[in-house]
Image 1 (cartoon, rainbow over the protein chains, first blue to last red):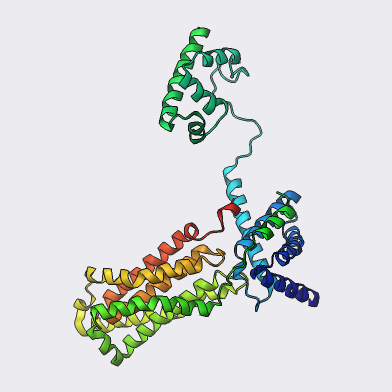
Image 2: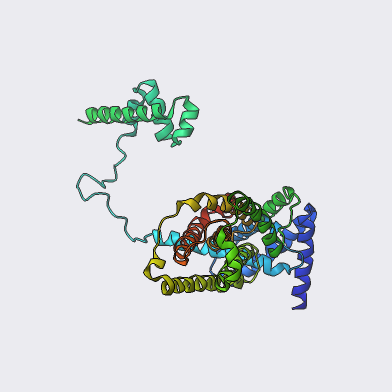
Length: 189
Length: 218
């Protein structure tokens, strides 16, 4: 009990110095509280993987950093720190629960369609024919397809790289998709 | 990122900070900012006739005192809710004065019903008090938002709900001084209605207006 109080007092003094701009004291403080947080988190969440605990420790350190002005040196340090830790772990648990609620565990992935023509394992068609059809597209349409579909850039990023406007990119992509569908169908048919 | 590297980065960018003041000092600051617009509104509109008579009416005095204590205690609870490690019982501080305020208004409604009959319970729209209400409420609202955002977003919905209650109670307290005396039913519907709507809006907007910095959100 006495050791814990002494530890809290020492950390409180470091935080007081950190609030006044002492960076070395702040570094010492964060280095001292990181193992305390790891210990608390491992005790509270024994099922968490090591990297999850570390993510949470970092999240709490960042939170401590953002609200360090709220520490009052007249009050004990550890309850202040642990209140932030509790709040952030509760947030994490809520986020985790939300994600779990949206996930559905399945043993066998469902087929995209029950038709005979699907799920044959050759869904991607002839890559060579696609490359040639893309090469045959007009310049603007080819650039749009390469940036948006092959490199999977966002419209904003593609606009920046190509110098085309977002709406021009949308139109070019639409026309290119239609042209490619026609070209590939003609070739197969 | 490695935790040690993160610690080094945080230490590098750690500038000195102004410590957040104790709760009651923050309440005093908030009132210091909220009172001048109220004084200005009273100076512009003049003191209402009912406000002078208020001193002789015990029920009205109790109602006004409870409204003011509701504003003070809700502001204190809002500020306390942003300090890590502070006892969560602070959040219940405004409950008793709020109950006294509502009881005092309820008693006023019953008294008027006995004296005037059903006419004493007629509610009508009074847009005349809308702009003075905005004038009195805008500064404390802005001050409250800025002041709570200096704290930690431990319970953003509760914090902003309590902050909104403080603002609405302060406005209801202030309106009595320069707005013509209303029947208790009007106070019940408009003032208490305003408190309910503003507090609910505060609670709904809580996590949008007051949250941990984006870099550390999921």
